[in-house]
Structures are given as structure tokens and as C-alpha cells.
Image (tube, rainbow, N blue to C red; front, side, top):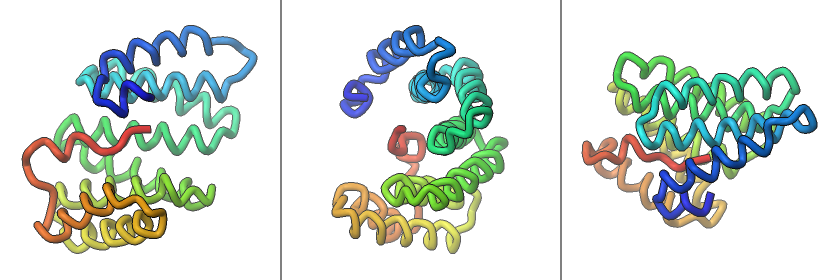
Length: 178
């Protein structure tokens, strides 16, 4: 995660894959699901879409089989990110994954991750040409960010609200990670 937070997705993927090798045991399916999702996330960040989907889909099955709802939420988030990154034909899928993720975040009482999910949901609505829905999601995200004293993400959402959307400078493809 430290490499990912500093933008070194290649090193983050290498460590995620090493963690996955360690976690592939029958002892802790939730930890294996987390490791699969992390590998899938960094594969997606690097544009390895097929590998990302394979890891995330396996993580989702494992998380659901073992009622690991937090892991399911993170994995749905990763699948939504992947769908968003792969183009407009996948935006409906991204919207579905973001919606499912938001439902799980709220059921789990995870307001911290709910804020990030709402910001991503706003981005997807923006891409789909739904400015009212995008603004509503971003406003909810901003409200949570401010309540959580997270000024950086709140400022990013404020900019989207002021500009009427996500600028076409690559910001759409880099939401916060897992």
C-alpha cells in the first residue's frame, strides 16, 4: 500500500503478488481475497485489464463464499474502477459496481470508504452525461470528507463541482485505491 500511495504501482503490484503467494492457503480465505483484490487493483492501475479482472473476480467469489462483506465492497470498487478504465462500453458496469459498493459501505457503516465510493460514483455519472446525479454524489462525498477532516479529497471534489465535471486530463482514471 505504501508504494501505491506514492504512485509506484509497479512496486505495489510486485508486493501484492508476493503477498498473494503467501496468502494462498486454506487457513484464511478473507486474507486471500484481500490479496487477490490488491493484485487486481494494481494490475488495473497498470493497464493489465485481463489479469485485473481475473484476480478481482476470484476475490469476489471467495469473499462472497465466506461472507467477507468488507472484502466484497473493496473488490466491487476495484471492478468498478476497472470497468471505468476500459471505456464507455463498460460505464454501465462501472455504475453497477459502484452502486453495489456504496450499498455495502453503508450496510457496514464504513463512512470513510463511502466517501471515496461516492466520489467515484459521481465520476461515472459525469462520464455518462448525468451532471445532476454526478453533483449529488460529489456533494455527499464532499460532506463526508469534510466531516472526516480530509481536506485533500474534499478539495478535489470541490473542483469537480466548480468545473461542472471531471477534467479530461487523466483525472478520471486515477481515483483513490483500496
